[in-house]
Length: 216
Ligand code: GAR
Image (cartoon, rainbow, N blue to C red; front, side, top):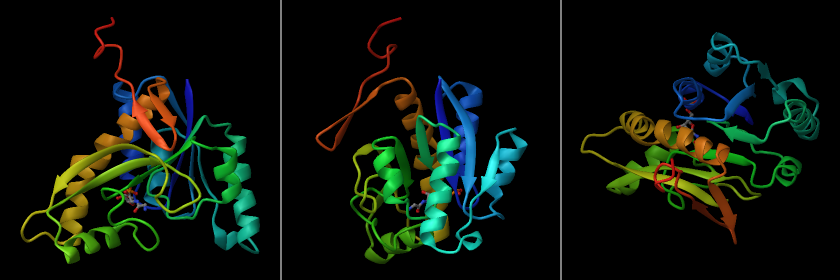
Protein backbone atom coordinates (compact mmCIF):
# COMPACT_ATOMS: atom_id res chain seq x y z
CA UNK A 1 0.00 0.00 0.00
CA UNK A 2 1.29 3.45 -0.95
CA UNK A 3 0.92 5.76 2.04
CA UNK A 4 0.17 9.27 0.84
CA UNK A 5 0.10 12.61 2.62
CA UNK A 6 -1.93 15.29 0.82
CA UNK A 7 -0.98 18.95 1.39
CA UNK A 8 -3.66 21.56 0.74
CA UNK A 9 -4.41 25.26 1.20
CA UNK A 10 -7.96 25.86 0.00
CA UNK A 11 -11.08 24.23 -1.36
CA UNK A 12 -9.58 20.80 -1.80
CA UNK A 13 -11.36 19.69 -4.97
CA UNK A 14 -8.19 17.89 -6.04
CA UNK A 15 -8.03 16.20 -2.63
CA UNK A 16 -11.65 15.16 -3.22
CA UNK A 17 -10.71 13.67 -6.60
CA UNK A 18 -8.09 11.53 -4.85
CA UNK A 19 -10.50 10.50 -2.07
CA UNK A 20 -13.10 9.53 -4.69
CA UNK A 21 -10.49 7.71 -6.78
CA UNK A 22 -9.39 5.61 -3.81
CA UNK A 23 -13.04 4.85 -2.95
CA UNK A 24 -14.14 3.89 -6.45
CA UNK A 25 -11.02 1.88 -7.26
CA UNK A 26 -9.65 4.20 -9.94
CA UNK A 27 -6.66 4.54 -7.61
CA UNK A 28 -5.52 1.19 -6.27
CA UNK A 29 -2.97 0.17 -3.67
CA UNK A 30 -3.19 3.58 -1.95
CA UNK A 31 -4.10 4.91 1.49
CA UNK A 32 -4.43 8.62 2.35
CA UNK A 33 -2.84 8.69 5.81
CA UNK A 34 -2.80 12.44 6.50
CA UNK A 35 -4.05 15.76 5.13
CA UNK A 36 -1.95 18.82 6.03
CA UNK A 37 -3.15 22.38 5.50
CA UNK A 38 -1.29 25.64 6.08
CA UNK A 39 -4.67 27.29 6.51
CA UNK A 40 -6.96 26.29 9.38
CA UNK A 41 -10.05 27.47 7.50
CA UNK A 42 -9.39 25.46 4.35
CA UNK A 43 -12.51 23.59 3.24
CA UNK A 44 -10.13 20.77 2.33
CA UNK A 45 -9.77 19.99 6.07
CA UNK A 46 -13.53 19.52 6.26
CA UNK A 47 -13.39 17.11 3.33
CA UNK A 48 -10.71 15.11 5.20
CA UNK A 49 -12.80 15.03 8.36
CA UNK A 50 -15.94 13.96 6.49
CA UNK A 51 -13.99 11.08 5.02
CA UNK A 52 -12.36 9.93 8.25
CA UNK A 53 -8.88 11.05 7.19
CA UNK A 54 -6.68 12.68 9.86
CA UNK A 55 -6.32 16.39 9.07
CA UNK A 56 -3.96 18.87 10.66
CA UNK A 57 -3.19 22.57 10.25
CA UNK A 58 0.44 23.68 10.26
CA UNK A 59 0.32 27.44 9.77
CA UNK A 60 3.29 29.81 9.42
CA UNK A 61 1.33 32.16 11.69
CA UNK A 62 1.89 29.81 14.62
CA UNK A 63 5.69 29.88 14.33
CA UNK A 64 8.32 32.47 15.14
CA UNK A 65 9.97 32.39 11.73
CA UNK A 66 10.03 30.52 8.44
CA UNK A 67 12.64 28.06 9.62
CA UNK A 68 10.54 27.02 12.62
CA UNK A 69 7.52 26.58 10.34
CA UNK A 70 9.56 24.56 7.82
CA UNK A 71 10.82 22.28 10.62
CA UNK A 72 7.28 21.77 11.94
CA UNK A 73 5.98 20.98 8.47
CA UNK A 74 8.72 18.43 7.86
CA UNK A 75 8.17 16.85 11.29
CA UNK A 76 4.43 16.55 10.63
CA UNK A 77 5.10 14.92 7.28
CA UNK A 78 7.66 12.51 8.75
CA UNK A 79 5.31 11.44 11.54
CA UNK A 80 2.87 10.21 8.89
CA UNK A 81 5.65 8.12 7.29
CA UNK A 82 4.49 8.68 3.71
CA UNK A 83 5.74 6.99 0.56
CA UNK A 84 4.41 9.92 -1.48
CA UNK A 85 3.51 13.54 -0.71
CA UNK A 86 0.85 15.07 -2.96
CA UNK A 87 0.64 18.85 -3.24
CA UNK A 88 -2.98 19.43 -4.17
CA UNK A 89 -3.32 23.20 -4.31
CA UNK A 90 -0.67 23.70 -1.60
CA UNK A 91 0.35 27.33 -1.89
CA UNK A 92 3.47 27.13 0.27
CA UNK A 93 7.08 26.97 -0.90
CA UNK A 94 8.19 23.46 0.07
CA UNK A 95 11.27 23.55 2.32
CA UNK A 96 14.48 22.44 0.56
CA UNK A 97 15.16 19.96 3.38
CA UNK A 98 11.88 18.24 2.60
CA UNK A 99 12.62 18.12 -1.12
CA UNK A 100 16.02 16.56 -0.43
CA UNK A 101 14.57 13.96 1.96
CA UNK A 102 11.71 13.08 -0.38
CA UNK A 103 13.45 13.26 -3.77
CA UNK A 104 10.98 12.17 -6.49
CA UNK A 105 8.45 11.43 -3.77
CA UNK A 106 6.63 14.76 -3.90
CA UNK A 107 4.21 15.53 -6.73
CA UNK A 108 2.34 18.73 -7.55
CA UNK A 109 -0.64 19.57 -9.73
CA UNK A 110 -0.27 22.80 -11.69
CA UNK A 111 -3.15 24.32 -13.69
CA UNK A 112 -1.32 24.95 -16.99
CA UNK A 113 0.77 23.12 -19.53
CA UNK A 114 4.26 23.52 -18.05
CA UNK A 115 6.56 25.25 -19.09
CA UNK A 116 3.90 27.84 -19.95
CA UNK A 117 2.31 29.97 -17.23
CA UNK A 118 4.28 28.49 -14.36
CA UNK A 119 7.01 29.54 -11.96
CA UNK A 120 7.02 32.34 -9.43
CA UNK A 121 3.74 34.23 -9.14
CA UNK A 122 1.74 31.74 -11.19
CA UNK A 123 -0.71 29.99 -8.88
CA UNK A 124 -4.48 29.55 -8.71
CA UNK A 125 -6.49 32.11 -10.71
CA UNK A 126 -3.34 34.04 -11.66
CA UNK A 127 -2.41 31.21 -14.03
CA UNK A 128 -5.70 31.48 -15.90
CA UNK A 129 -5.52 35.28 -15.97
CA UNK A 130 -2.10 34.93 -17.65
CA UNK A 131 -3.50 32.47 -20.18
CA UNK A 132 -6.36 34.82 -21.13
CA UNK A 133 -4.08 37.85 -21.30
CA UNK A 134 -1.70 36.09 -23.70
CA UNK A 135 -4.57 34.78 -25.76
CA UNK A 136 -3.37 31.19 -26.10
CA UNK A 137 -6.00 28.81 -27.48
CA UNK A 138 -5.03 25.72 -25.54
CA UNK A 139 -4.11 25.42 -21.88
CA UNK A 140 -4.37 22.45 -19.52
CA UNK A 141 -2.82 20.94 -16.42
CA UNK A 142 0.41 19.20 -15.44
CA UNK A 143 1.39 16.77 -12.69
CA UNK A 144 5.11 16.86 -11.97
CA UNK A 145 7.64 15.84 -9.38
CA UNK A 146 8.82 18.66 -7.13
CA UNK A 147 12.45 19.73 -7.20
CA UNK A 148 14.20 22.83 -5.85
CA UNK A 149 12.84 25.08 -8.60
CA UNK A 150 9.30 26.41 -8.98
CA UNK A 151 7.38 24.02 -11.28
CA UNK A 152 10.63 22.73 -12.80
CA UNK A 153 10.64 19.04 -11.75
CA UNK A 154 10.15 16.04 -14.06
CA UNK A 155 6.75 16.06 -15.77
CA UNK A 156 4.60 12.99 -15.09
CA UNK A 157 1.35 13.71 -16.96
CA UNK A 158 -0.24 16.55 -18.93
CA UNK A 159 -3.66 17.10 -20.42
CA UNK A 160 -4.79 19.90 -22.77
CA UNK A 161 -7.96 21.97 -22.38
CA UNK A 162 -9.36 24.44 -24.92
CA UNK A 163 -9.74 28.10 -24.11
CA UNK A 164 -13.16 29.31 -25.27
CA UNK A 165 -14.42 32.70 -26.46
CA UNK A 166 -15.82 34.64 -23.55
CA UNK A 167 -13.88 32.70 -20.91
CA UNK A 168 -13.14 34.44 -17.64
CA UNK A 169 -10.36 33.28 -15.34
CA UNK A 170 -13.06 31.63 -13.24
CA UNK A 171 -14.78 29.72 -16.09
CA UNK A 172 -11.41 28.61 -17.41
CA UNK A 173 -10.24 27.48 -13.97
CA UNK A 174 -13.39 25.39 -13.61
CA UNK A 175 -12.95 23.77 -17.05
CA UNK A 176 -9.26 23.02 -16.43
CA UNK A 177 -10.20 21.37 -13.13
CA UNK A 178 -13.05 19.32 -14.61
CA UNK A 179 -11.35 18.31 -17.85
CA UNK A 180 -7.79 17.92 -16.64
CA UNK A 181 -6.84 18.23 -12.98
CA UNK A 182 -9.39 15.89 -11.42
CA UNK A 183 -8.49 13.24 -14.01
CA UNK A 184 -4.71 13.64 -14.03
CA UNK A 185 -4.00 13.70 -10.31
CA UNK A 186 -5.74 10.37 -9.52
CA UNK A 187 -4.12 8.88 -12.63
CA UNK A 188 -0.64 9.96 -11.48
CA UNK A 189 -1.15 8.63 -7.94
CA UNK A 190 -2.39 5.30 -9.30
CA UNK A 191 0.56 5.02 -11.68
CA UNK A 192 3.04 5.71 -8.86
CA UNK A 193 1.22 3.36 -6.46
CA UNK A 194 1.53 0.58 -8.98
CA UNK A 195 5.18 1.15 -9.83
CA UNK A 196 4.48 2.47 -13.32
CA UNK A 197 6.43 5.75 -13.15
CA UNK A 198 10.13 5.74 -13.99
CA UNK A 199 12.34 8.82 -13.65
CA UNK A 200 15.58 8.93 -15.60
CA UNK A 201 17.74 11.95 -16.45
CA UNK A 202 15.03 14.34 -15.25
CA UNK A 203 12.34 12.84 -17.46
CA UNK A 204 9.45 10.50 -16.61
CA UNK A 205 8.21 7.50 -18.44
CA UNK A 206 4.81 6.00 -17.63
CA UNK A 207 4.68 2.26 -18.10
CA UNK A 208 1.38 0.90 -19.34
CA UNK A 209 -0.68 -1.04 -16.86
CA UNK A 210 -0.91 -4.83 -17.03
CA UNK A 211 -4.33 -4.75 -18.69
CA UNK A 212 -3.10 -2.41 -21.48
CA UNK A 213 -0.10 -4.66 -21.99
CA UNK A 214 -2.44 -7.61 -22.44
CA UNK A 215 -1.38 -9.25 -19.17
CA UNK A 216 -4.27 -10.47 -17.03
C1 GAR B 1 -5.88 23.99 -8.37
O1 GAR B 1 -6.33 24.58 -9.56
C2 GAR B 1 -4.39 23.67 -8.46
O2 GAR B 1 -4.00 23.26 -9.73
C3 GAR B 1 -3.81 25.01 -8.11
O3 GAR B 1 -4.60 25.48 -7.04
C4 GAR B 1 -5.94 24.98 -7.21
C5 GAR B 1 -6.40 24.33 -5.92
O4 GAR B 1 -7.74 23.94 -5.98
N1 GAR B 1 -2.42 24.90 -7.75
C6 GAR B 1 -1.50 25.80 -8.10
O5 GAR B 1 -1.77 26.83 -8.69
C7 GAR B 1 -0.07 25.44 -7.69
N2 GAR B 1 0.87 26.30 -8.35
P1 GAR B 1 -8.36 22.87 -4.97
O6 GAR B 1 -8.00 23.33 -3.55
O7 GAR B 1 -9.83 22.92 -5.21
O8 GAR B 1 -7.77 21.52 -5.28
